[in-house]
Length: 290
Image (cartoon, rainbow, N blue to C red; front, side):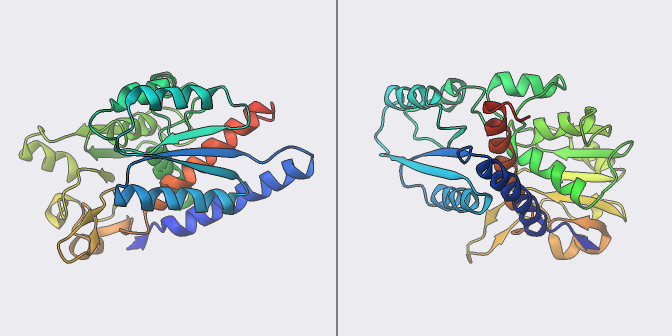
């Protein structure tokens, strides 16, 4: 069993980004700039935002955090996004989810300029990604691809099963791994909550790569996978005792795996690294460097 260490991979990618940024700054250009919008005081969101701001600094980026009260209206948030879209000093913008119930998250995502949509969720970027065109790719799914690349895990021609069909993970990773990107050309089966158990087991037991993102602690058990499988665990679940675990029963399943991601320390770090990759690309496009 080998660990797909997201921290090691992310640190390597961020160090490379920092070197590129240093060269651009030495050439007289400004630093890349990310703006993060945080609404309310949601504790997990505070943690995620802190990680993004810290990683911006490590990457050589400038960043700013705009805090808005829980009571902010959708109209006020959309007006702020419109201002940022017109601000040439900002390369990428993130609105941290979830948002309060009075705000429609999809309308907010749609309002972000596709050129600054470093999360990769705007319909324009998602559609371009699905068509195999140049686009900002959804960060978690993109981070998984970068992790597989870093450890040189074979993907082309392999049978990959994705468990979970969210717009954040399941749908985009199934598209990326089946398309002819820098990593891809796999045969991908997308399963979800309505997939009958018998069919799910039939698919996962034959899979070379299993990616699970369902938010259920210990969902993947040893009987579901074959020996030598590569297992990507996207789940982040907090148990009553405070322990963070994934969607895989790690201790029981790991001995059957050739590669497996830990939780924490796996995909989460890669999501943030992918945001830095997208921000650098946005910046380079602004200066016609890419």
